[in-house]
Image 1: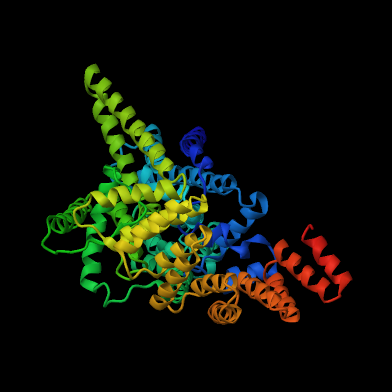
Image 2: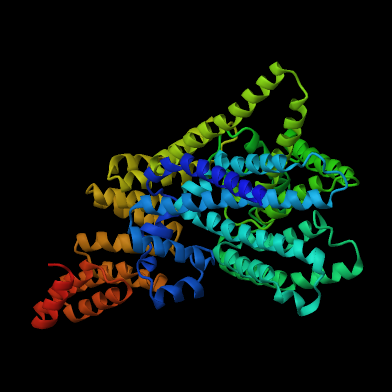
Length: 611
């Protein structure tokens, strides 16, 4: 019992230390990378009502289906509004809880390992706590996780991991009991831990489809440390247990394929051979980033000229093959190393890019769950190091103590620096631009994207001239970037350059005729130029492309009002209000109703508008 209490204390200490390290993130702002879609421009999360839950659970949004993530953002909005402090706080707290769960999970697995291993004399209670504490602390303070924690849009990472870890822990308790009871058939449903594991797995899938690998992870720990796959009868039971888990994974995978259909990169654009090569590269590259977290950037572009004979690919292939063969050899006597390596590979597999979603080669956020494997190995390495240095002289012990302190201190320093890079869009994309410009094989489309995103951040800060400069740079690096022209057009509109803005919108629409935002923005310019017929044409086109956007109806209503077509204006204002009850919409409708002679209705709208 005392040992269990100590494990909880150690787990809480690692979690609290991680929470403290991430406190500076609470001062960070939103960034110009998905945060608009997820939070500060997302009208759907402003009300926790039936329409919201229908939107969250029954629609594909932002090329994803993760309804529980939307619920978490909506809850934050109901408490904090658009104050980024509260949104960051939720993510930081979730990360702290995840550190607690990782530490507890590893300690629990090592306790099982100690019971089942042929030789586990090194795993005293104290050493189990050391391994758990080191692995949990590394998970908590390593800079590779800053993207998942400090980026508000990546709430799905920490939320999914929370339920994933709870499911895994529940299953560990179930499997430990099952080794003694040997349940079969429907008898397993009487285990509360099995049911907990299943429910938490469902919640993990509703947070992010990255959790689809959990059933295979459960099979890995069934193989070792639980040794539940030794007899044919046991194998049948274990596989029967996993039917609900695999069924849920398959369903989630199918939903994800439909949700991300528009974001999947075609084979013609990125051949399967290149994807496979990049996947093998990534297995090593992620480990490299954990060992030397120097240039962790938000967006890793694909190499411009991928080469299967490059030293990087050859080394990555040797690393992957060599580590796998070594652990296979060691598995004859000690299976724990292969079990941990298998966990790393399995949890990383969905994001290795074989089915490429988005144009990135890899991403730090993809390592949030897979990193538990390497950190587990580090924890075991720490136990071996402690045992070794116990037998050494005082000087060597002093050196080992210094090393044990300098490594976490260095990681904390790097994490604080990485958190600062996520302070806002200007800092984030300025850092990305700086790193990309140093590379010899520059990916110009990625540079264009970085300048575009930093330009948007400058625009949000009302630094319109700086925004125009960055949008122009983006156009130089990628002349076919429709968003670059459209965003520069918006900036020109703010500075009074109507003709320049109009030219940019014309060219942006030429490049991407399906951009509803470009039609809306051009419609605004046409209205300013009193070309109302052209404005209405553009608004109609944008509504055709995006019929659920209230701002379009509002702008078309303003144009109708300028033309004196007040009944049509009221109709559009009403549509906008039904989608999103914004004060401006009520004010404009109230003004129109007053002109039409509906004094009572007009007064009600003006009161709702606060006028």
